[in-house]
Image (cartoon, rainbow, N blue to C red; front, side, top):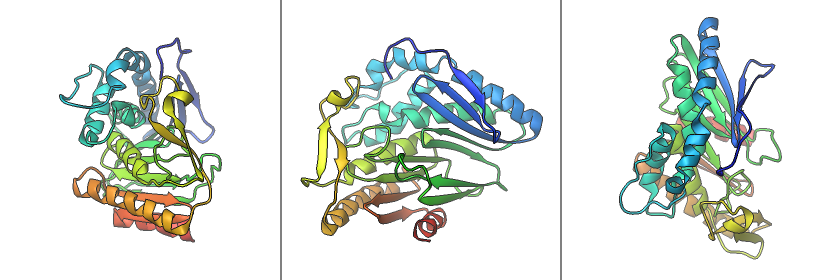
Length: 294
């Protein structure tokens, strides 16, 4: 996200009834269920809620790209506030509020949707970071993609209305954002999408090791606007010894267990070189494990 002139926001109704909204780097695919008049109203509410978000965040980039130290920042826009709140518990690491931008935007749009009476289920997917709304009787199946270059799901999460999960996010070196670790994918379940987004990045960063097959570059050399500046990020991971894969997953699992104990996540699925580790959220993650191994 840079301070540039973006083209006007665009909206498209997809053949399956989902709504596609795009504004610069913000790319949302939205599913809404309920009474038809409510669905039509909610689609318009989602569209209206997106207007002004990108310019507002651009005006606050100095704060949103700054590492969190000392006093908690107090930005103006609701999305920026969500970003800061989600990143703040992780400030013992190098972290900026940008770690939660996708999940925060998704939740912002979701809040506009569910303000419309009569919506039984809604999901806002911002590049794999998903904000959810489910009525008590609703169930949502979410396919999990390990490699964006291969869009077929490698796992499945089943979220029910009675579950506490309302946010899902995935991070890893193959994703659209930079990662300092070597995880193929870390999917996090949380009570809110911004928290899932931030935690997925933190955990994915800790699934790490040193080996000649791992290639890294400075973030600023890949993207001059990156909030990671000159920190090394992973650009390729080759074949690794089994013991190194296990050690990297051990480190990520410890990180996930810590966040689970602190109440910051509800569960996590860690993947590296065909290996799988599950933490927390037994019912949902059991479905993920079954899908991954069947």
